[in-house]
Amino acid sequence: MLLKRALFVISVGCLLMFSACKNEKKSIKQTEVSFKKEGELTIYKATDSTTVTLDIEIADTEFDRETGLMYRSSMKNSQGMLFVFDNEQPRFFYMKNTQMPLDLIYVSADKKIVNFQKNAKPFDESSLPSNQPAQYVLEVNAGLADTWNLHLGDSLGF
Image 1 (cartoon, rainbow, N blue to C red):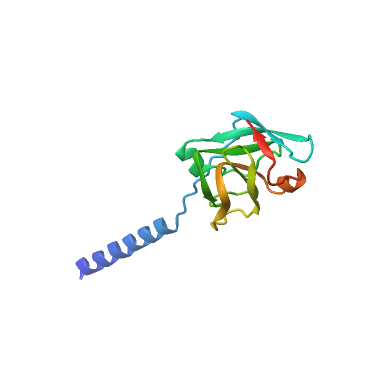
Image 2 (tube, rainbow, N blue to C red):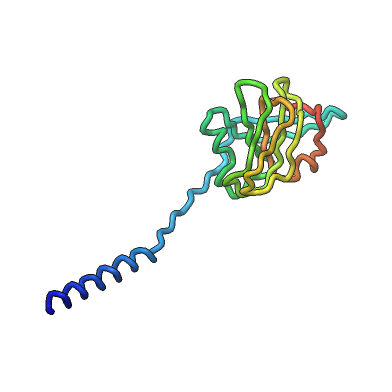
């Protein structure tokens, strides 16, 4: 009888201990990724002589291209990320783990704008295709492509 009672007390104690551990939540804090200027980019308007100049961070490695602007909460309107690929082909982007809305500007090998994906929604994993072959993709804050009145055929220099 004493043995049964001891086993019961031990069992209840273990159950309470495991349930207390189960409810314990661990908080993992995401480190903020900050902008690192790696160059400057100028957008040249095809219709007139106006230009837009940006500080850019360059994503030219597989890891940098896969990560992009993920895990960042903001970016200045004078900044952008330029994705550089080895060849020109149709591109597909998505907004997984991207906290801010963006305009994606698809650019051909000869540095002409070939398409846009405007106002890409944060955390949306839907495909954002270039619909034309592109070798570069410029990501800027949502709304800037319209603010700057960009058009297909405008060009980039970097």
